[in-house]
Length: 391
Image (cartoon, rainbow, N blue to C red; front, top):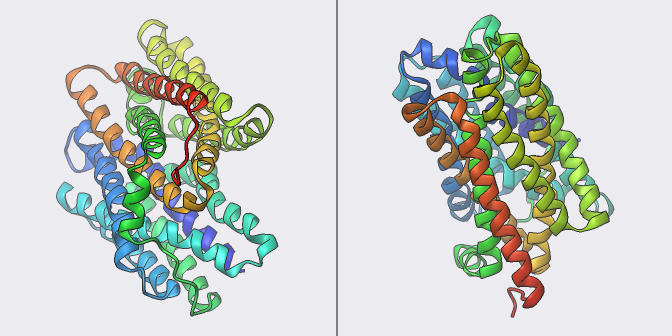
């Protein structure tokens, strides 16, 4: 039962991390800043997560996991509550940083705890249940949070997330045992893995993939509003389409990786994502708005499927580099993903400031195409000269 509360915490974190895309226009209007400036709420969150997660994991390595989870969720809840009363942009930015510190500490700890509390034959399912909290958040939490924000104001969405976090915290307080294993890697071990060229190549691919996705996703509501005339319900529909596609893509990517191999599946996912993003810009620029709406929704759906079909084989390839160091490498990959999200948020803001919302797809698609190029180069090199960390 404690794994359920871990999954609920992940659901709250996933909802908060992705719902901001739909709320961005309302936040920008309310605190009287540009959409590009509001997008830096995403950059600040993702950059704090990328840096804070491994640093906090090392700093709190010797503290009971139950205590760490309680601290992490409490900080996350406080950040959301601060957002509900934020009176200006600096305070709202600070609240996002606080949320990210809590989230960045909570997620890897929750995954580790799920393994510790489950029996050996159920550990895979326990991890899957916790991580499914993020997936379900993209399908249900994000569109619902956007509807709540449109009806009651964007601050209500943060209040909703805080409530979800509080329920998860209460469940863990009563359902999680003390004395759980403390197996977080130290800083030297993390650096040793990060220096290996196979891991570095994988991290570069993850960063470029994440940059491409969040260059567009962060500001997705802007072209939907301005170019296509979507209202709040239309944006919620687009977010639901993306979340549903991401869930389908995540499952499909895992199945395809087993059937045709991780390398081919990841390449197909990156190629499909790059194409969908580039075509999105093309449709927004050159197709009449009354016809473009359905095409853009279709491309968002294809982007979600292909983009998240890339992720399971990418994880599988990272584990394959050296299974003994996989936990550390996957932790670094999570930080790389959020670093990419941060760069994507900043890049999208730059595009909005210097060009047009319709140009976001070109830029995002180019970044994903670069990820594909690195992936193909890395795959070719590994075929010619296989290597592992231990070697």
